[in-house]
Length: 115
Image (cartoon, rainbow, N blue to C red; front, side, top):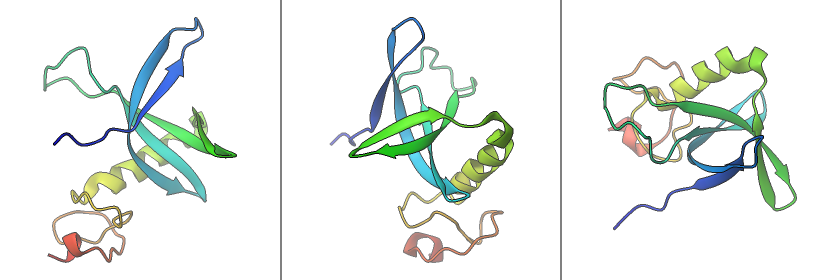
């Protein structure tokens, strides 16, 4: 069975629509951010780096709006996103991790990390 993907449609300045897939959400300085990628990269060469986007999530009523993150925070946001994925487990409880096999410095209560 195929896993359900969280796809978001964006429009560029010329009105052209394109989709990005939300890989994950994380919190930084009390604000929610999303990590997004192209759901179907044009070049499937595994040696090519995947283009990753970090966007701020703004809740507007029942809708989530994705807005570009502030450029002056981008280095810190990239570091926070990398720490999010450093653990390697895919549980929802693992925002921060202290696994034996990774370098992050946070505590995690998830069962995947305790194994």
